[in-house]
Length: 391
Image (cartoon, rainbow, N blue to C red; front, side, top):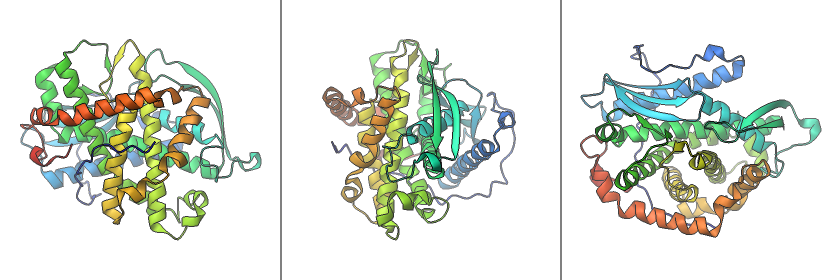
């Protein structure tokens, strides 16, 4: 089932710079999440770590591209919202890159649930005597109202808990970087021209839009996905570099590659693609909510071009061919997560039948055939040279 989508020639950020002394506090129109409400110190540190990384990304973008005249600052933040959402907007010269504070919490629990299944990463220990992390949690199946829930008893070994944390972290970073992608492509300003009173949300209340706007928005999601995947490659490198230190679970998962950096790169990339597929399947539950609208391409379509973007970007960084990176990734990582989601009650496997595969090919062809028309619509506001885009 290893299908190849269209290739995206990516854009790399300049090296991240953590010197953020220029960061200033300005009142903003969002209700920013107060992390002091979290009782778990580890979660507080996690939120702080994510925000530090996203501020470094914002600073690197400012240094690498320069701010356009109508933007004086880029500000990532977590906002107080019960649902699963992200948004980007420009208000009073500040570009806000925002995701709901519930997003990292939901994803952390989701991956804890999936890593509790011994058939996911079967090489990692899961004997009862080795379980160190135990808790009971009501997990939200549909991350939009009415928030359907199911109670889970979660038990993880230290290695599995570490793996769950790393994979959920990759997904949170992907969501933030996706919103940065909307900003870089000029989608925020173009959306305001088309919808003056509406920020660029990932999920909307039920709305009626023209077929032309729907096609444009779906293309925007495709562009933002590709840029996010391309930028995410640097965080795959971070995990690879820690495989013999903080992330020792990787050596236990693939002991045959303990001293083979290229082998570790290949497997961490495959795990990341599998994790993003979990994210897409979870988000896809919103698609069938009568009160919610989203413009993301179907799950398989997203997987096709995301894996190609990651294989290309990671391959270029490590002098590896995309073909070498793609070997066995589906059977080793993607498929076990699909089965684990099914066993947990998500009905994920039905998203991967032949009908969905055929539809994925059709949607990808539509996205690539219409790209000239859609990408030129944002030329005025794009930070990137649209004539050089491959997506």
